[in-house]
Structure formats: C-alpha cells, structure tokens
Image (cartoon, rainbow, N blue to C red):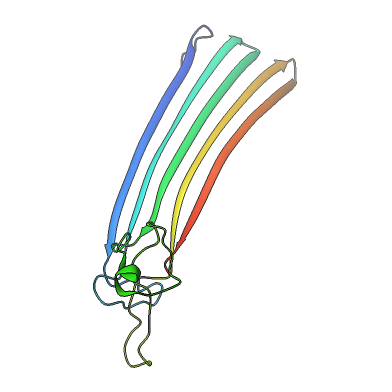
Length: 163
C-alpha cells in the first residue's frame, strides 16, 4: 500500500428522494375506510449531502473536516383542500382558512363509515446542518485527538385541522 503525506483528500455525495402516494380510501394503518374522495395524499421530498476534507500536515498531524445537510419536506394533504363547502351550504363555525377548507367529518348513526375529510393532516419542513472537525496528533506513544462540532437544525411541524 502506498501513501503520500502531501495529498489532500476530499469527497462529496448528494442524494434526492421523492415519493408521492395517493390514499383515496384513507389509511388501513389508521383503521380508516373512507368513501372515495375523502382520503389523503402523502408526499416526501428529501435532499441531503455530505462533503469532507482531510489534510495531512505531517506523519504526526492530521486534520479532517466534515459537513452534512438534510432538508425534508412533505406530509399529508387533502384532495378537497380549498373547497368552500361550509360557506356554500351555510354551515357555521367552520374555519375560513383556505388551507383547512374541505368537507367536515360526520357520522350517520353508526350505520355507515364516517364520511368527510380526515380531521388531522401533518406536514413537515425540516432542515439540519452539521459540521465536524477532528485534529489528530501523534507524539511518541501518545495520541491526542481534538474534536469540534457545530449543529443547527430547524424542525417545523404543521398540523392542519379540518373542521
């Protein structure tokens, strides 16, 4: 194996993940069996990347730096969002927020399944940034390793209630 003290080593990697799903009858995991048109759509969009750099100062001193990021957005939405059903039919005390508009849930005496949009939708918009730096110093039979890290993250969780 050959090794050179003069060379720096660097790398970069990135990936994108995108998923879309339509559940027109609700989710069996949530024990839903909604009539068609009252389900939900699910989406996830993620981008992440990492970069690293190593530098050999001498046979006894090495520095390594790494940076990573992740951004994820997605969640549940209603196919009926924005439908102003309450105003058109005269229902009172229903939200006027366009993001939360749709068909209110109702149950008909236990004879049929609940109809209307699901009561709660969750949407996430998260970002994470991380930086690490290591310095390794060999001196005789001793090794000293210094480590530094910086983390920053933003996690936004929005829940939309359909009334």
